[in-house]
Length: 221
Length: 197
Image: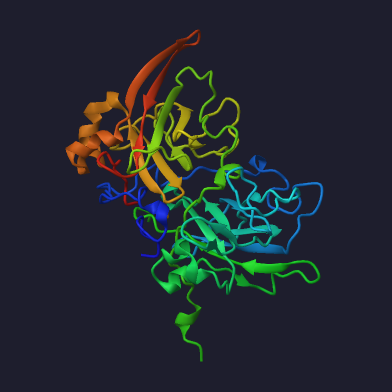
């Protein structure tokens, strides 16, 4: 099982929110609606939605990066035209969200939210700023490793996935209960992007590659 | 020499992680809860709360619905985020408010195949390392529920957690709008039935 359990007491908020009863499997598996997915078109997205550094009048502070990869199904086929949504903290580790009380500066030139559709090879691509680590109140001296939140649709609503992408070699991994909720190292590694010199644009931005694989839908042929 | 297995892509699924508390400026969008326009003659309202194991509202959950149209057809056109003004998108997204409440305006889906009419529901939240998936059925279809492949697999005492409650007939000049209440209990005595798919 590559997914984390619902209950992981080290991540305190799971204690009262994790379902405790056994999950029910419908006799016939996913139904016709769960095997289909909402469809999104280019006209539904804004022109600058995939460039998080270009959404304001000035350039955001921080380390400019390119994040790209492929969205694949369990058979390795590219998932084309799928909606990928991202959101993240700014370079100082602060979200442009009213609920974020971390005393780090907001950046007037960075909102930190983006969208794109995968291309014919299943590829997504964002230009953004490397997010900072930030503290949270899960336990004393708790810090989240730098991450970008990803929300993706597949070809079936049963494949819907929200997850987080991390950066290679972050020393905070070992202290992060959200990442450690995944029991196997090899599965945690699936959330870590890799620095890629082919994606890196000389004199401009480092590039990171990260592929996303969507789970099987049991009834799919 | 490289073993052929080294070149086979690793296709284990990417693990899920929590949506966290700070998605509110990124994922919700203006028409998210409006699966059909307000003037639609068959519009219904679905509303409810997301509650934790202590019965406290969950103010940082994201509820998504996905459903067939009134004739039981699965939507296949674009428009998930920006529905054409007269259209039905089939997809809705609503973040819960500080009282844990969400709402959608949609139409009652028609039946398709062996299934009683229902809406697919996904809930993401801080504290949920992966989403919970359930289905919303309608109280007037009790007959069809007997034969439904999911409901018939659920112990009778837990079936009511999957059936919305008809709460009001708010009459306006345009006619009545039927409202259904569907609370989602993540945990506890009244824990909603969640699906393992």
